[in-house]
Image (cartoon, rainbow, N blue to C red; front, side, top):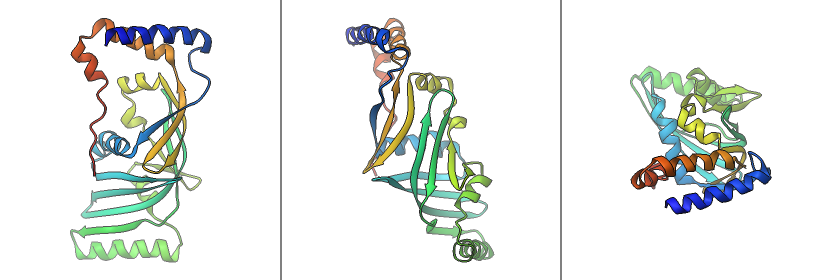
Length: 224
């Protein structure tokens, strides 16, 4: 393993002398739906108390997002269809922007009080059928999950990803955009080879073999 890392580091240094800090040509990195949902759980669901579940089904150019919430006596499972407008991830900005392309659907719900059920159903009907609008953005803004600008949902991940280890990774990979495809997210970005392989140099010098293996262990994934 150490020999492999050393060879890669030496080749990368040679490439960096020609390419600079970042490779100018964008590269595409496919991310599976399973991996993406595992990442949602680790960095969003596990850090937002009212969210009990958050996962997405990915399709060509759109996704269906499912969420289960437990807040103020309301336990509800929801779904909504979204388009990915932009995705930018680097050491300074971690922002995903969505366009909502369907009404919010209530798949299942439980209420602590009967009057609460009536109030929620009436409010949803009023927004969707009378105002011809959807309350999703307003609700998510209230709980500081997203902010709405020009009718687009902006998910700022900095509050959850802004940790030294993650920012160090983002210093190596700059994501400029992403495209949705069937069951995968195709991320487009540039690689900072010098930062990446200087890190590999430190790893092979300081870490033992067991630590090297743990560093490449992916986020735990769940099927289904």
